[in-house]
Image: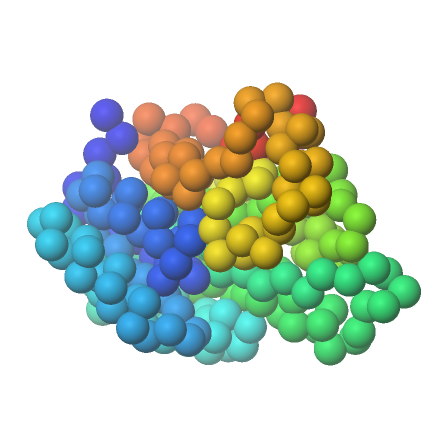
Amino acid sequence: MFRLDGKVAVVTGGSRGIGRACAEGLAGQGAHVVVTYVRGADEAAKVVAAIQEKGGKAEAIAFDVGDMKAAEDAIADVARRHGRLDILVANAGVAADSLLLRVKEEDFDRVFAVNVKGSLACARGAIKSMMRARTGRVVFLSSVVGEMGNAGQAVYSASKAALLGLTKTLAREYASRNVTVNAITPGFIDTDMTTSIQGDMKEGMLKSIPLGRTGRANEVAAAVVFLCSDEASYITGATLRVNGGMWM
């Protein structure tokens, strides 16, 4: 089940954390994975090497998803080079945490450029190819805070909430071409982005999670693999929560 043999997948921000887990998970099911990054060429190369060492197929390309034209062109180029593009996992994201009254305009612009415009641009580049093939899978990585909110994350939560609206709209627009569009909202996952959360703050967050622990990146990746598989062909416009019950 959930095999992806012969399919080509792009994972944005695939050099670390959840992105890396998604890239390795998709490759483990047989997909040729294109790992994208903006910085950290060494980390991206390590992901590719790890996949290849296990007999998988992968490559890495660099571009800034915050540059809308560059992102769309890069994704479209993958489809041209491989003759197809079956899967897009729009994972790349940034945060600029601050209380509303301290939010800087440049932080707002950067977060929305990467998290929203970048995801939209990558989807547009991918869906053009998927429409011609009359099949495809798009998965947006949103966040639990896009559903429940979180003090000090006004900009980040707004950007992640925007992805949920984008998911539903694109799902309606391209269902007739057999292109499914879904979102995943991870909760408190052990990644580089959450390592700074320690002490009382971490304990408080753990108390809000019914399962009583943080999540693992590979648990998010498993949900991504499922949504990209043929077994999920009747699921579109959905939000799959991987949050240990933090938000229901």
